[in-house]
Amino acid sequence: MLYLYVDGSDNDAVEAELVAAFNGLVCEWSELGAFLVNQKHERDESVSEIDSPDWSIGLNLPIENYGIEQANRLIPFAQKLAVSTGREFVLGVSSSQGISQDMVFLDANSGEHEHSLLISLLSASVR
Image (cartoon, rainbow, N blue to C red; front, top):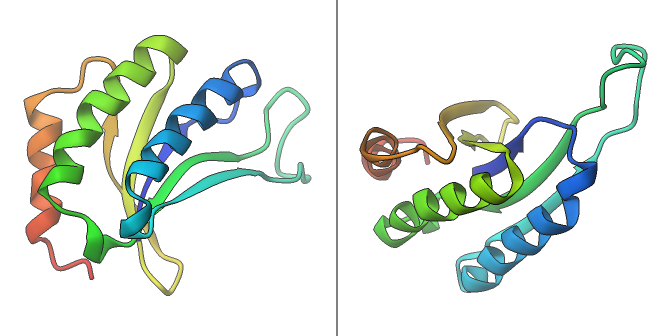
């Protein structure tokens, strides 16, 4: 599974904008099996009072449905959303065994280097 999530948990002020943007992309990719993620985890003893609990906002897409069109769309999507929300994003891959690997971080300044990393995912044997 490929994921693109907000990097960070302090999202209260921009939650509506983030969810709306990710939902729009999910709707574009619905036939590819993309789905919205908005899961705020419960605070536990490992989270201090001044820190926010983990909060996953973003989308998941089955890796077998990730193609050149998706790779080309992610950079401008993340750039625009980073400018409007001040957030960064992490794109990674998770296995069916629950192992996740962050592959690239995207922000308002993402460019050719990040795009080449997204393209490299197309040929990687992560399926």
